[in-house]
Image (cartoon, rainbow over all chains, first blue to last red):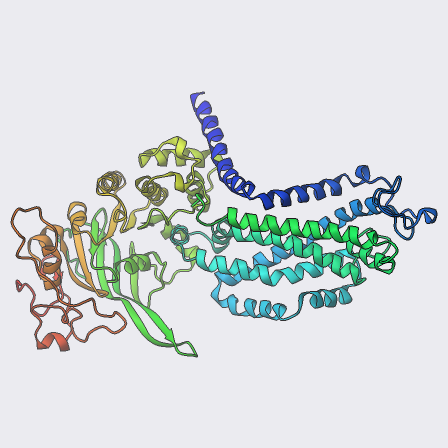
Length: 298
Length: 333
């Protein structure tokens, strides 16, 4: 009985400690005003993406040629309509869903690939040469060109855009992880756990990876910005989302023909892209400062 | 092999035969091996069950490398290591696991030897996860027993290493080392990073554990005072070579090698008078990548003669259980 009470006691105190580490990071992050702005923008986008059917006022693909090219602040269409009379606000809302989805998929795939390669390369000296040369090879392609090549091979759709962008993220991620692994594996606690007979897999997953997490989180956040921007760029070039999908980059591409008559068709999605890319970048920057290695978690 | 010790009645637990560890120096454009740092040069010794063998020497003399080589954390360049009469130096990791349970290590820096992202309770549980099939509940209770054993409390289970003091962390390191009931523990400068008062507590704990579990220690240290208090026998190393081995009593009372004499004279003694009979060695430790010819100590030895520059002195038993490697063994300086 007493034992049970003691155990729960330890548990609760433990949870407090755990929170403490994350709370310190969060507190540091929230001291950064730009980061707060970034977090708000990201939260708004996430809300828009999740509740798109509720937030959108119209069907994003439904055409209404009578009400085409309405300017902003028109009645019933506060962001106007495009050349087919589709509501721009609704398209932006649904577009948030797409760019977030593609961004998250691309970054997660990229992280999985990059972390695997980085861990193996950093840990096993013999593999390092081969893996890093492959990474160098990937590096030598200009990003967009590589993505275009992959899409040309796989076909034009959003899934392939995510794959292309993820492959493009792998080399940078692998480099970052490898660097951390190289420094962490020389630490005495790795030697200590080795002396206890731990397998390489255990050492990598339970001891090296958790300690390499800070740069990975920062990279992932920053990469979200790049991924969203690249999705838009590829769609703008006609390689990503196909009409009538309400993708931001595709919307700009469509709107550019009406640049002079209805500038809001390009400006509104442009601002949406700019805001979200800005948001992920400043949050990434803020995280980098907040996760400073001198932080009190050592 | 003759058992060469005053404790000849005891069983040999660990035996090193001609152990060498060289680190290659690579250089040039092609990264070719240009030479070797001779960290451990031809060390042979025996360790008996239940004894504490101190290893002493300057920094860079190879004492830590020796410890790591015994555990297999460094691959041997040459030589053999027998543990309970079984050769262990070439075993694969899986075959080695049963010896891992028997041989453990306590590391020098308690701040660096614990994973900063792992709760200490989990760090200790991990040892059981790797070597036993205990259930989560059993593991937890074993860990709590361990924590009590080393003078920590149950409530420390969920804490992170940074929440502990140096002495407490070293206790965690000790708990981890004794978790699997080993028979042999290497203490690599285990108390050097601690305050003197904490040192005494940790040494006391190590002694208690030794009596309770019949542990043998290889106690690596540069602190002769600690060795004198803690160990049964002492091995003196210089530049990767063993220069003297004997019981603590014998070596401290009658040091045979001039290097040992110099080391012992350097122990600070509380005295009103100026300590005049301190032996000051001239020069620095030679480069282990390019050790001197003959006796490695001849460059700094106050009694060195011509022969010392040419011939390396043999490792010989001068008194029963008291070994030294010097051409002019026993000459007082």
